[in-house]
Image (cartoon, rainbow, N blue to C red; front, top):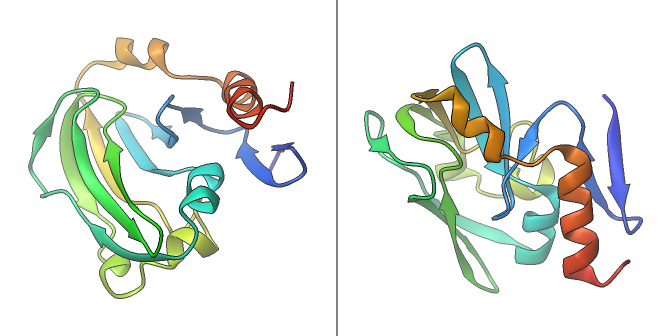
Length: 140
């Protein structure tokens, strides 16, 4: 799988979209699989808990939908798109560290049935997200 590595340590996969609040979005048909980026999980460090959204919940783009807790802080997870939560990653309840180990794979957080595909135009490409991280980290 093709990736961009920023600052020698933050992986960004080229097959998905990104939000300015560090969520990744992988779209298959009308379903978005959503998690937090490698950058976000490295900033949080050791993740010790996750509050998952309710299946069936209708959300708007930008809504706070879940919480990831680390030994350092608790971070809100925002829905990058509007739609209905159709599945959550139950494995995270017993193994929240999956987000640290595999943020783009087993560490996914929820799946959303997309209400308005036009909202995807607001999402960042892998290249734009890598620029955002460079800015945040002073790597320009």
